[in-house]
Amino acid sequence: MPELTDRGLEISTYNENLEALITKLKDIYGDDINVETNSPDGQFAGIFAQAQTDLDEQLLNIWNSLNPEKATGVALDRCYSFNGIRRKAGTYTYVNEVFTFSGACVLKGIEEDGAENAYTVRDNAGNLFYLVNRHTQAAAGTATLQVRAAEIGEVEVLPNTINTPVTVVLGVTAVNNPFPAISVGVNEETDFEFRTRRNQSIYAASKGFDESMTSALLALADVTYAAVYDNRYGEYNQYGVPLHGLWCVVEGAGDQEVAKVIYSKLSPGVPLFGSIEEIVTDVYGKSNIIKFDRVGQEALYVRGVLKSPSGRDFDVASVVSYITSNYKFLVNQTVTSNDIISLVQKYNTENNIDLVAYNLDVSNDNAVWAEYVAPKNIIDRFELTADTITFTKG
Image 1 (cartoon, rainbow, N blue to C red):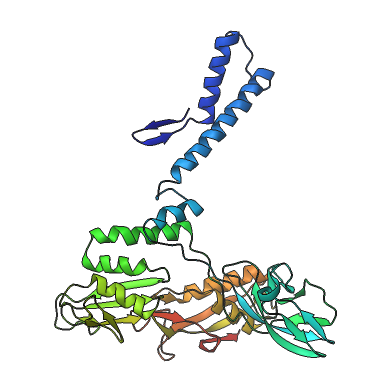
Image 2: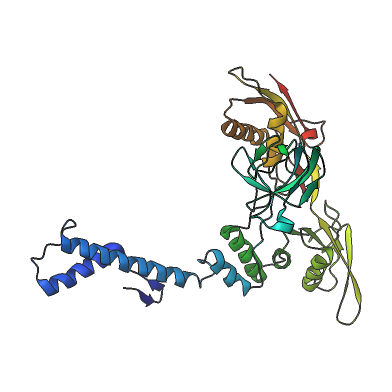
């Protein structure tokens, strides 16, 4: 039976419940009662023991939902709302879809008509996409219209893959996406990510000053990255931060929101470093200049050779598009040629092909090439585009 102890709520296992029930049955009917699993009394005991175990586990789940370290899902959202922290919501993937019409027709969109009535198309992987805005076509021709993934979060979209109409409308003869997604959705923050951010937010206050300010910045709902660098030793450090100064680097949230958080945690007389300046007015009407920086983007250059050992033909542009859509970089992340090779292997698995990538090099300036490279600036994140990847066929 469930019991509250100094360790919390403790419940019995199925075997413990079964043993306790069999003991009660023997007390009533005698020790010679047949409680084998294939006997009527044994099955009776097993059913009730499982029911008790299920109830105990539900009770334990309710108990854990009150614990910020063990709660999950909606219960976790409720717990962390007391800390003033909200889960970062996911976003949708949007794609430009080319429609071919044989005549006049009207296509319904989710904005005006709702998802259940919107014109729907499907990609090769079975993902559904809804037309965003209602469209009226006056005559035969083509039109480029925006569609949105039905499911929230990251949906991989390769060119020429969304070409199956789900909704049948007289006048629509073909649909296709000649380009990748114009905006790739972001997955909702997982329980693990949410818990990590919350712990950073509340525990850092008991640590050093830098950690406390980082914590406050990460607590902003739209902030996805925050770092605080200080200079405790030289007149200026290698980044240009003055002695006893702070350099705050933030991604997400508005400039004024960020500036107010920095000001709220800033000790008197501490100089700030950064290219962005915001004015924060205190309760006495005095204007304070708050400096900080944003996460930047640097081009990552990749070159190499692709080959199919079996001699199969392949589209280099398709491989490039897959890599640019699936590589997610961290701030100041060092990238290796093996990272690119891993993506090519993943492409092979998803497209049933046997490509091999070799003679792979990476660069941050398109001049000096190596097997690994880091951004030139520690506050930058690499960015990959089709223009910065050069693959030749072997």
